[in-house]
Image (tube, rainbow, N blue to C red; front, side, top):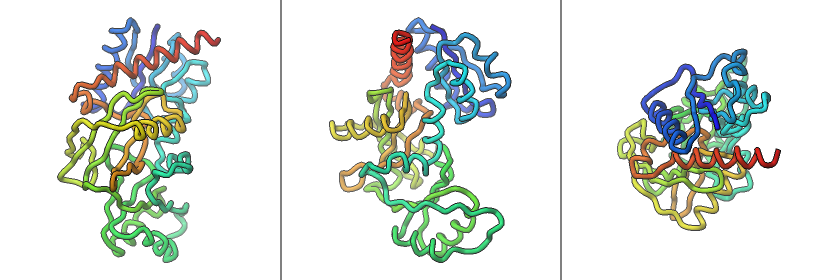
Length: 287
């Protein structure tokens, strides 16, 4: 079995280098040849993927991913899953029936021709109370997330982001700068951890956070797997904030880094590869 790991052509940090090495080695350990390449320009995609049995698409270029799918080669994750997970707004809409969502107000579309303040929108947002969180719909590594303490800050940031898709959320959480991350490999949980950052209101490792083991219960397990199924995730992470013992959904990531949790002895890469091999073989039998 042969596969290709495609990553963004403009982005290669230490976290990416780590996961590339781990996925390639995990595939090799299972008798699978996995080749890494940066995602080429769309016109060269078909020649790049050749006769691969699958593509691990570790990027957010939905168009490129769709081109690969149209060629008949399965991608992990699919372009639709990546598209939904890359937008916090679309993710929340996809999970509208779940009762673990944080109270949220979505920003309306504001074209660049408008520069007016929206007093009605500000009043609606304030029903969430202070402090509150503003998130740009698209963002990674804890960036594009803003803590708002009062009306003046709300008006200023809302005006600044008026032409950018974003959302407003009630501030929840028992512990500032802390969340729970679950890694999913198809229909199972590959690992879970508590991310803690004492220097920021975001828990991201990139902003100084650390991880420790988290033991989940059966109810939490079923919630995570239900969300992953609703988003059709082959792998990735589902993040929560705990408030008064209840998990509140934060976001889902179709290509979450896993170096930190693997430092706890959890083989996330191996479980990802196992799930891909199983899916490819099952699809081959059906055809």
